Image (cartoon, rainbow, N blue to C red; front, side):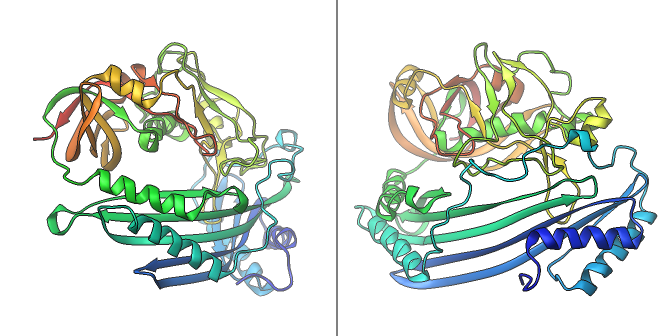
Length: 451
């Protein structure tokens, strides 16, 4: 439960004081305090309602080059002291890690809050009855679509949290986040011929959220379009990844340039720095300072500056995604991409990515594709992180003569990510409010295993 006596800033400082008293050489503390409310409805009735108020506190201590992390949800002074003593005892027994350590004070960012980023909506928390009304409206709108047989679930949710980070090197900063969501899952058909699809929208500001009716209607229409799905033919065909799933391809690229993976030598892009990984003219940019975007953050989890950066420029890979530890291991400088939770030390990660858009709409891309597969859903994955071999279950629509012919399911697409990414063709339909702006992506010559 949240502390009744200490705010996140004071609690983080109390943790540092306890770590110092317990004998740590250095320490950092993370405090996350928040509230969440979620409502699920089915058949016009409330099915599940949940409200939680939580406090998560984490402490990392360093004894020389040895480190340990502990966490708790109890903010009583005796608990903080016990946490610090346990963490110090664990660190003394831990193996040495010559790359562990806090940032030098000269590396710390001057930005200590999220002012100007608009990550927190000060509008009052919605009443549970308002959330229930949104969920019911979405369900009713989906059921009104001809061909929808039932609704699996309609939901509405709200959350707000305060995040605070402090360290013995002098860093102290924090900010708040809010989110508001509506989602709906609709089903068409009966028995073994049932198919489902969904729609979901989330925003930082409640006023920006699309109407519950539009979300439910979209879920219903997507589900009905899947009625009568069957397997596509097997063979080598072009594949168009719908905007809803296209970001997964860029996610595989992001994982492959993660500094921890590179330091282990286990990435399929470990030898690709300064070489072409995307088509000529295509860029992949990270901008963690975009306003009113859920993936933005004013500083990283080690107190370093976050800033816009080209990870791929004109198709050429520009660098590795680094936190302090991976940067030290590779003999480089951190890129300000450390991320962490209360229970573990920092690790590198990307947020708020944008891939260059093309000139064509999805309809124009389908027309030019001729015959092939439009993927709208991906199921499971088998990705070899060392070789880049790629295989995923998929469903979507078979395309003939540049137009959608029929819905498909139970097929597998396979290829190699290095070749797939180099041949990407981008559409122009990326949604601007998403943390990762990635349009529909066409990949030539994937292997389909269907009928």
